[in-house]
Length: 363
Image 1 (cartoon, rainbow, N blue to C red):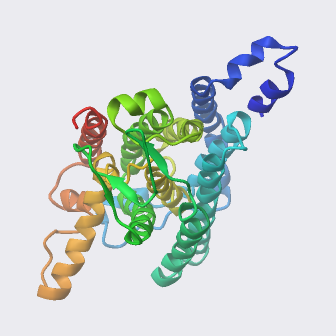
Image 2: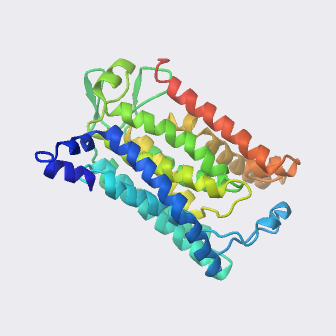
Image 3: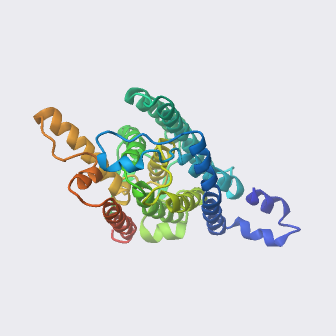
């Protein structure tokens, strides 16, 4: 909204000129999103309690019995704050901005359906239905946006979007049609990896803060031809606008952590974790940092791999390599306190985010 006020009235109201700057609008989006969460989440928690929308705890997690009855679906508050901040400070003429926002809402609706059915009936959508919905959304994004997206400028040359770069090297590699398979795996994998990580108070929320923070920096750099030329990075025109949306996500996560930290007053649920995970995957594709997401989002990668390894080990050898998957539950079973697990995972996530940023210069 403020972006269009600048466009319409800057001639008569010169102070509106400041709204043309992405850094200013990004800062305001983050601050606004944070305070929306801080002021309205207590009311939302009260509403969830009144509606009896509370978390059911797995019988396998005896140590989590005390969490039973904690309100769920906090992702609604996260999504609402992101949407309002985006409406206020975003540029809706920017295709990248709109695709990410619409994709976030689509995945949020899929997560909401699962949460709502789970809270009403005690059991959510089947894995098949849940994944099928996510596949449809992902394929729609790839077919109607990623496949038709323009190439990018790299070292004074234009490359098609099927080229990718690897961390710590200046070389580009053309994956051809397989690139779209990679995009599919990144978006779908990120959505479910964050969902798997959301098992302890504040674990996914805090880990996402450092990952989204790193991606925000990468997105801003990717839209600046001077920085990308100096650092040997892909330059994409109009990409920096998505930092407004990413800043809104950062503000929402920071505010939500206020209530989601141990002992959690509310959980984000699938309506929060799935769209947030899908978004970091989609953004990494749009800014041409597909592989670097493996580093910046390393915590989520490790959590997802721990589940995959557990399943493969049990099915092939009838043995569990972990006491319980995902990995954070394994440490719980070893007797490590929840708060210590969460903080240590945050530390690792911050280090991985710093490594991903540092890799920009080490080429």
